[in-house]
Image 1 (cartoon, rainbow, N blue to C red):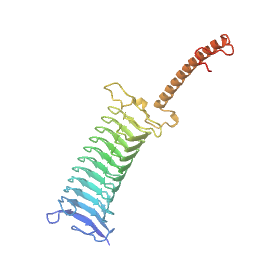
Image 2: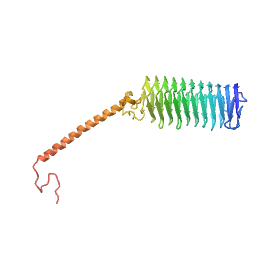
Image 3: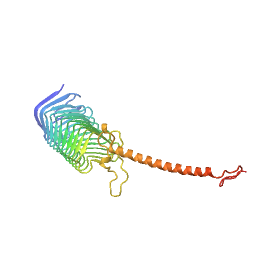
Length: 365
């Protein structure tokens, strides 16, 4: 059993403040009483809903509710354009638009699952996508732009895969991944012209970015902060950001390979990064007034070594080792010469007779 809704406009009223909600217990203007039964929406407009059973969202799915949404719009709702929350709740968006919603464009929480293909989220008061509390998302070929906070936000264990997406001109960060167990995997993502960072990962979260573009952001292209935070960046273009290209701090682990990091206004690389298994340059103490955490760019291996040989930092370490070895050899030679000279003097002196005691030795009875 299922329901299909096509070519409809659904607006909330005071008596029925949520356009459509469906959940395991069945609440709202359209209810589903059997778990895992899908509702299909095609070319629907869900707008201006206030507060009610689904929290003033354009559409809501709770505890086993499932929605398939195609060519739908969620506009001007009091809270989210669409919200999936609870175990086994699912929402699948194809060619949808969420705009001008009071909190977030599309949100998922509490181990819900969402997918989005060809979907646009814009002008939300807060976040574009919010994935949190164990929810998962698979987002492809979608655009997130001009939202009031982050474009795409993962927190509290949210997990998302982002493929060929764009997060542009958001007021804060394009993609923010925060909190233990939160993880984003991004492939061919463009996160540019955002008010803070292109991508941020922190508080023990993980980010794996491959073949991505992070340029023209107001602070960093990519920032990674906090112990147990991990970022792997490979094949990316990180250019033209106002502060740093890649920034690492507070114990975060950043590994890079085969990236183009250039033309950032301050440092291309700030902090310690690792070039896929090669220990990064670790700056020593610096004179007062200078930041000892900032290595010289030429000392930090950014690209994979490949067939081009060792990085500049590696060659410097080899040179320093050779200098130490040569100095040690000179010192050892001097000691050996001194000992040999003393031994030669002792050998050329008059032999002592039996029974005599060398000067300075203790006589035994």
